[in-house]
Image (cartoon, rainbow, N blue to C red):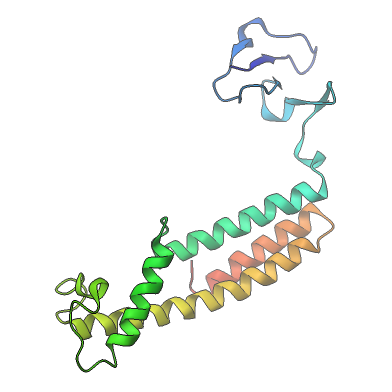
Length: 184
């Protein structure tokens, strides 16, 4: 475990009760913690430096803002699709089967196994399942187009910002646009 030491932010003297193993610190990292997060320090080239949010570089602000933006977009998508490894292929295959099945006059469960697995759950017939799958796909495209437009605009605004406030404003505007569109 990595060692950490808690310091009195006024005197700089270590608190003896704060030394020891910190299970939240990754092995090999050194952390100097104050009583409050704002009192924390980080080690830069072997020198303790106060760590405060306003010390983030513009690059760090942009990177973290883009991560937050993509996290919000992922959350919105998760309301409409299942986020799980392999589901992209599942959805694409099911959409392809639904498109073919909807025009196949001789459609059988053997030809369209993913659709057949939903008979009696999604709809009572193979053709019914195909129609529901295509309707859901159209809903996803509708939602994704609105989400992507707002996300791309916010991403551009974040990448072109010169301040923390500009990045925050871009994220706020993104969330407001999602609310206006009824996506969150």
